[in-house]
Image (cartoon, rainbow, N blue to C red; front, top):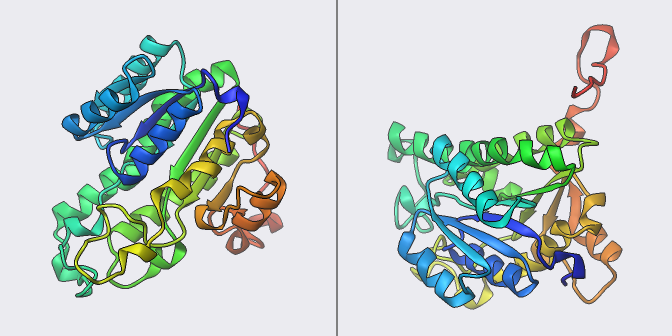
Length: 285
């Protein structure tokens, strides 16, 4: 579900060479967008760029855990295309990095080395922060920007055996909700899109633990992403969308109502214990 105003819009997509990343890259270019393709896999990026065309894409091998690399990717995107409109934080380290058979044997805390824990937090939590910190000043100056983070289901965040992936993703969602509040009124929206369940990407091991025909197709992420990147998407911020519940055959308002909800855990933030009865809303200036 694309929009004419997407033609010529500039996006930067991390994790572009992965399953969801490739689906989004193809859809973005198909909608007329120009896309900076970012990933640690240089070979994967070159194959994708060859497929999509060099006029519409820019291949940027990089690691989101490195703040300098994040700044450089934003700078190079702006140098090539003139600006950055849409940042999609999709790059992630999955549980197979801990153990290949994690779907069959529950990962235990003893399986997670301090180095692995740090790597998950650096990529899955700090990476989106580094990217947003590099992208926001230009977006703020133009009073236009879309930041879309790919997280995971609440079930995965809390499920035994999905640490450190789940905790890193839950941290990213909490931070994203805070960032949306910081940027309120700036012209920059911040939202979350999740597949809604196990997705047919290399992150889900092909070990017979799941019937792959029953997994969510990465292409399901496309319709809500295109809407959030559009002009109409400017009316939506601080929301999480479950892509599997987005119905492209109905009106946008109905698709949003069926698949969207406030991101984070806003119900838990109501009625805080606070001097004077509650915190006052502070200016972002």
